[in-house]
Image 1 (cartoon, rainbow, N blue to C red):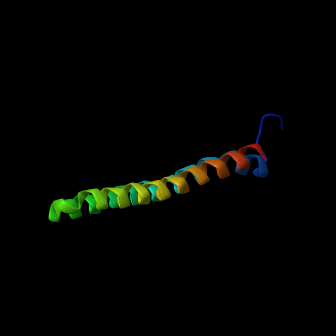
Image 2 (tube, helix red, strand yellow):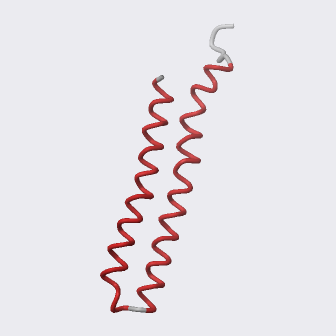
Image 3 (tube, rainbow, N blue to C red):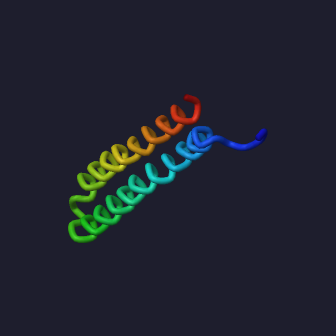
Length: 80
């Protein structure tokens, strides 16, 4: 049967996509929540905006790093 995918080939093509889908959804939600809470905190206490913004950017960077790790894992799965 030429042109058909075996189960292993199918999974090899499917897994990188699923890894990206599920691995990026949660960091995106986290970044949204971080931004929302930071804006609420700045709204309540505008004098602390600089400290809140610094913490927010650091937290967003950590959440974004998880998404980058997921991309690396997906590339490893694709080319392994």
